[in-house]
Amino acid sequence: MSSEIENVYSEEKVWLEQARQGDKVAFGKLVEAYQGPVYNLSYRMLNNAKEAEEAAQEAFIRVYTRLDSYDPKRKFSTWVLSITSNYCIDLIRKRRAVLLSIDEPLPSHPSLMAEREKQPESQAVSAERDEMVQQLLQTLPEEYRQAVVLRYWYEHSYEEIAEVMQTSVSAIKSRLFRARKLLAETGVEMGLGGNREMAVSS
Image (cartoon, rainbow, N blue to C red; front, side):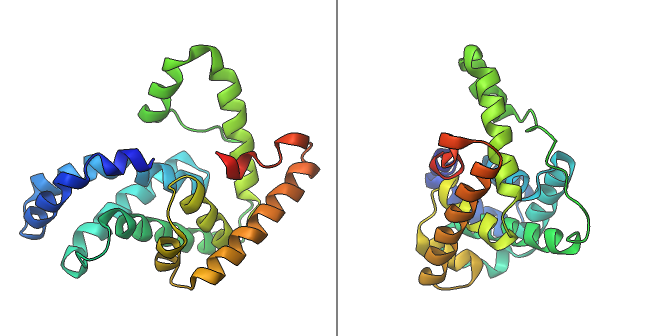
């Protein structure tokens, strides 16, 4: 995921400046560049394709309306994913009383489909692995899930995750340690055996 972000880093400063001046075309370029990471983060957090699409749309609305408050000293990608993940956390907390389904397969997102088409022979294995990982993620408390996704899917540093979650680096390390332990224990209960670490090694 990080490669998608880095590919546009050199151009995003220009787009950002234009967007902050009200240029909707420039903002559209930012949306196009980040829609994959934003959608995938939303799905990892929410485990529901429709809700992920709606969350991604709302995240970009919030990004657009808060452009004036963006601090250029921060990485734009970190800021965007921070808005996205925090919005998803709000949604999770609002629906906490509702039993979440873990049976829905990963959606056919263009980036995922393109990767699978490159290696059709591994499609079934990849789909099964993704479903197992998603099921494991849904067993974590939302603050642990957020830290795990940002660390292992988006390769954020401890400092960046702490900034997103508005806490300390030591707290993030502690959450990740506990999350890995929970994932390992849950993996054993689910009969994953030697695959217990797959959710954090991807």
